[in-house]
Image (cartoon, rainbow, N blue to C red; front, side, top):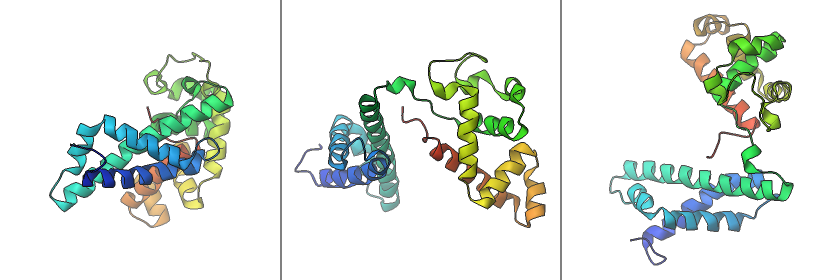
Length: 211
């Protein structure tokens, strides 16, 4: 069971607030925090079987894992709601939004770093783009020049270490062990910095798709 009088429901409301908070910080011009939290709670009721699966756990570690999974689920819902509200107010369709996949970001950085736009035909995999190569869709985000401009701004937003590792790895095509030796750190540390940099770039560009 999951109702307003259930102790588990109190936990759901708290976790809904946790999930809504970061989304509201990003979309606060378009939607109120209380509306996001309420929507998350309503969504939880619709997904009550999944909620019970996540929270009805006796082991403390498993319970924490369940709470984390529920927050992720509710946060994705909140972001979908917020993006829909933003699109409605700005006068466009949510279908027009473009989300950068890690593989696309890495390939765009290679094009950006080389300055050779013709390289796009060599580095882009149609499966990564979600479309046929050289096919331009209505979304402005899929225009190559606009995408390169996005990448340029995102790269410049990185801290110096992340920028350096991403550049060396993708533009100069250095191996992890080579960068590690040059920077006097472990290859594992270089790999962590690299993936953190890619995550930050994706966040700068709008985040992962919530759909």
